[in-house]
Image 1 (cartoon, rainbow, N blue to C red):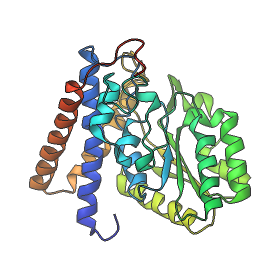
Image 2 (image 1 turned 180 degrees about the horizontal axis):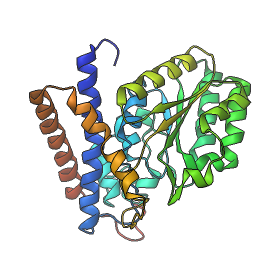
Image 3 (image 1 turned 135 degrees about the vertical axis):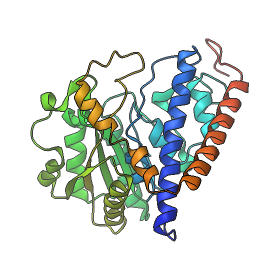
Length: 308
């Protein structure tokens, strides 16, 4: 977003987060209507992470995502109609409707894929960063993962290689307070961001409810990677406002959930905009979402056994 003044940046941040939110709310509605085959993991509440980080990326920078990755896809510039069609099991989807939300990819915008394996995208991102380094590219890799993935061997191995070879990568941990239904207090020892110390590169924890804070931290980490100075680990503190998956009874602490709802990143971002500008953005986003849904619904459903 270089070249934009602060007011323009605030508007674009709100637009991006609202696009992520309305996309997922619409998919949720379609799920309730029986139009979404397979499981659905929503990232509602985490939009500031995706938009804040991706605001400093170009189409040729690459990202890897998770099973909860719709907001990453939208923020990185994936086609909304093809995303919607894929989730609805339609032929015009990214994988012709056969893979669903945990296997979304669009290399034309640097999206190397969502991933159904916890921590599965971490070594892919490191491999991509190594390739970028070997080519002498100015591009960077960003790896999104949840707090639960930090307990996998992939995480420690990838951090070690990235630090050793000073790869152009930013590790972004979306700490949404839960690994499935398990609180971080039960499964995380110590402070996640401090794990970068063991591999001799910077780590920091940032608040994930304000998109500007995320964007500033990500911009510095991405610039460091572009300059050849190696990785950064960002632990972004956020919260998913829905359960682990659609249909999860989500028996979580209600007081904690209420505190996070009051810090909804979209509410915070909207407050700084003039009412007329916010309303215009909302109208434009809604039109884009409805167009994506219309395109998806017009696409032919995939048939069982269809490999054409």
